[in-house]
Image (cartoon, rainbow over all chains, first blue to last red; front, top):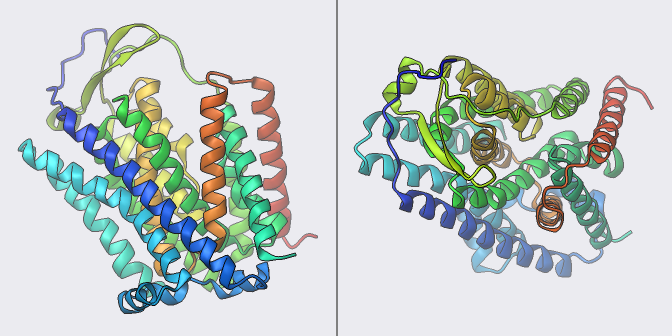
Length: 136
Length: 284
């Protein structure tokens, strides 16, 4: 360490990058929690007599991971489908944050940082949409 | 006992874990997995699924506060996520593979050891001496991995530059791997990379680590969810309880960092970890 090291070029992201990401995290969290709490209340009303072990063994949301099943479940008011949607919103929130970062780096004409943000986003999509379903 | 009472008890336990975790600075999420496995007989991989949902909710709560205060370095966080995300995906895949290969017991033992190491590392006194700006490496200069923040306590603006990016990327990959395998935040490892390798001020390290934990947990959750190991009915009371507890801890008792509470919490965590190891080794 040195008292006077050579300075790295200081590039500041605009204040609206911080403001937008803060909003995304808050809106994503609140939306997810509202859906999840509503979903769990409805699930408990419909499954009042189910046991803890049975709930664990059945994993109520596993049947709604496909797009068609999820859409059908939401349209027909299935609590499990709403629980799945809530989890998906929670998972999508950090992804939206990465996409927002990509937007601001691209707007700042920072090619390398934009490429890094794109790579992080692609890795997340590959993990969730390709590798995860392959493991089921 | 009806399901609803199980969930109420789970939420209460999660509130207590989040509260004490926030109070001690160790993080309540770390205790959730052993509690679910030992006291609720939840399969390890399902407990990991509930833990990552908790981390996602927690990270969004505290992460947005740090962002609002502009303590988080978005540029450095994004740069390091290029290492944590693949680490987390590989870690989650490894866990699912071990479960499919009927090697959960090995996973229990490994988790017990990791939790003990992290609990002890969490006791480490955080460096609070005056910050000295570091020499940036070539990559750090090229990407502009530097910044500044206003320190309210010192009432001055602190400028910083990132130093050893190669070492930081290596530690971050390991942090992602551990986080993905065991469904924990790995905050201790992430802060180590930001603090020890990049030589960032501790406040920036803590805020940026917290911000990154959300994306790491997102990678793990995505893989486990798609693989069918996230049970929302179990995860919701845990996530809501732990987040509410953490908020209470940070708002009701700001600045309280009792060493006695911290040591007591660590001892409880070490005890639970030893129980995990004993179970993994086929004990009672």
